[in-house]
Image (tube, helix red, strand yellow):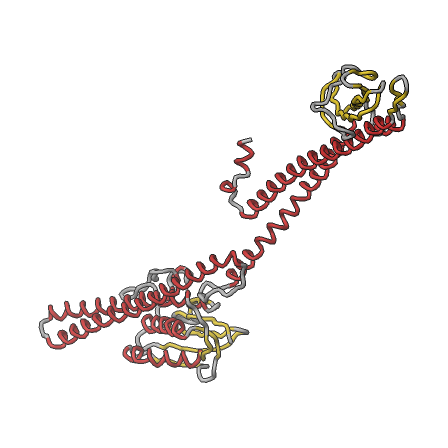
Length: 465
């Protein structure tokens, strides 16, 4: 019994559906048991009431059939009454006729009534007699016998076999009906559990259809019982949105506080380099300027990477012109290319190229692609930037004539991974990682491949609007 109770213990059932089904079945079993006991009790009372009605009518009919005669009493037993009693089954019938306290006919040892019978009002009781359980009834009637008024009592008893059989058959029928109900309770319980869990499943589908960056409050209609869950979920979303806004503010603040001091230190170092004539000091200052420059680039790329990760989680696409954005980034990179006497050529940037995306993220990605091209291009070399279309995709191609690829291009996309031929060129190993993540966020792709003759070709594919 304890083991069965442990099986249906809700605390041990991890599935809410299974818990509902078990509770429904346990409740159904309790109701079935209660129904069986109730039907048995009602059937016993009904059969007893019907037996009492027949037994009372029979003993009254016998009593009314007694007549006073000159030499005593005359009793004419109504056989129809005994036939009526026998109709309830194979019953045994006992009777006794007593005048005052003396039995004149019938079974002398038949149990007496617990209380004296009144004038023609049947009295009923149960008693054991000759190995059988009897239901007895007695009726008293005053009659004139030998010129004296004396009480005449008629007692009639009947076994309860028929009544017990009726109650047993009724209880058995109720048991079969209850068993059928219990069998039907399982599919009903499954349907009920499905109906109860349907709003939860609907809410889960609504949340599952949301993108990872959709932090709007949930407005899905739900039953009253799920309102606390919905409020808690919206509260969590609001706190998450606030935390992400705080993270964005921190990123901007960190970028400002890191870039400004590094720029100031570099400026001061360059001024000191221009003013000193001591060669040893100039060598140290050059190293300082170079280290500060690398630190500044690394800090910028780390912050750019953090920005891209944040905006990927909060991605909100908007219409923009990729050609115009590329032209703006090329203009920003052009001074660096001129410092190294690198020629920048453009193709396909005059025609609009509409896409949908995050302008800030795409600007960071384009700047990293062009920065890499300028860093690794040959001095007095060439960089070709072209924009075209391939089916539903816009394709930005940046070709340089630099050192080319010495490693597997797929491995260069990993964080802080740099090629084996970078030499003394500074970098953090995050530029290609940033471009790859931006492309993935925009449902595009980024890859590197060897140039047609020399150098490296960077290809950025983005879906057209």
